[in-house]
Amino acid sequence: MNNLVFGKYIPIDSFMHRLDPRAKLIGLFLMIAAVFIPKSWWAFLMIAVVELIALLLAKIGIRMIAQSFKPMIVMMIFLLVINVLTLHTGELLFMIGSVPVHHDAIFNTLFVVVRLLLMISITTLLTATTKPLDLTLGIEWILKPLEVFRFPTHEIAMMVSIALRFIPTIIEETMRIMNAQKSRGVDFENGSLSQKITSILSLIVPLFSVAFERAYELADAMEARGYVPGAERTRYHILKFHLADYLFILICIAVFAASILSRIFL
Image (cartoon, rainbow, N blue to C red; front, side):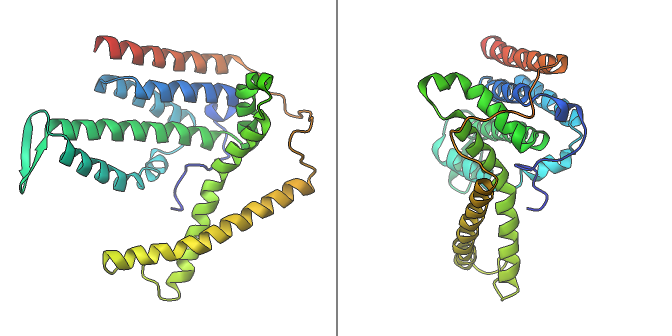
């Protein structure tokens, strides 16, 4: 858990870090939309190559991103089991006892897994290269047209930003509680399935308690610094688009368009 990158900001100097947060958010939406469109492996390969180049430009190690995929293993196995039991179309590949495993079950599982992995990579890239304040300003700018309907854009942007940044905090608290309970004799690794479930459930109450305590501390800190929801405020840091931001958005648009074309012609 200590190696997870999702939700963490990595303060280094890179091309991706210097991009405008609004450009990164627009690119994020376009890339996620592009992930859901194609039905061709060539299109997924194209998106993966673009993401790999972006990760290299962000100077984020591939191994660090791969750490975020570990919690997906259980979901992959669950999806595979469900598809094997429910999908009986396509060529019969082999038998597991009396349960037939068909081509479409494996194929559909791989499609879902690849899409999830690509989405996690895109989101992790955004949070790792964007400061919390910049992310809040970017989300607020995107939601700004909704102010016509008196939509609380700033408050929503702030909540999204805080929620993303709370992920590594909750992970850190989980590890701390697990270590404390291990020192008291709780075994999270050995034992029967029911014993493991009981051990995991013992984390829930203290974890919720710590999460609410951190939330209250954050609220008190914001109030102590004069934060008032809905109040008029000025900006010390003014966001400006540069040539690199426009090029990044154009590349994401090209990937989105290529994804649509692959759906039509492939």
